[in-house]
Image (cartoon, rainbow, N blue to C red):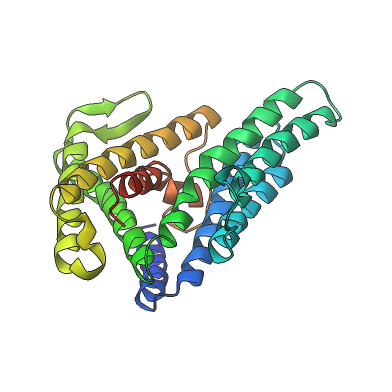
Length: 282
């Protein structure tokens, strides 16, 4: 299992670093969409394994279209149209209406409302939140968006690494024994510390593309992304425990499913995007 985990990690990060180094923005977008659809599918399958009904094909189609709508709204923006009529906003409206319509035509009345609710929750929980990666990717000037996304992902993931190492070495006090018995307060402290180190280091060594995050912003983002990362991780633990599954899937051998891979990003990326937009960091 350790060998598979190492292989999967090296393969994944090798692909990501290659795309980032080449500044292949469209390749990064495709990776986001593929992982996002896989993670959404795992969420729906976990609900089915718990004996619940979901509109899987409808939800996955909506998730895929959301990534496409955001992508094309950036490539071919609708100049002059209010934001309420953007491709993404219209799609979200259609998804809600579509789920209601699908509920009406469900062959069984019993369980149809639950299926509608779970389908919508899966849509907003995975593709809607992960789609902020696409928004960050196409933010700012050429090359800046991919640097900002790399920064946000790195700080988030190194929070996980720091929490894992500190928890293994020093973990004594359980942080959330009901939701995730292995997580400790010592692990949280280690995750926050490594997140701050990662944030400040990246800003220091890449001032050309991350200079807008210097000063107090590097500290605030280090702490904020670490906190959002932990909440996102615990949020997925709630979903898995409710569905009575250990891993969301087998997307990467040794690591787990795609949802396990992006759980912390689902909360940290919207926080990061909101921060850089509201503070004018781009």
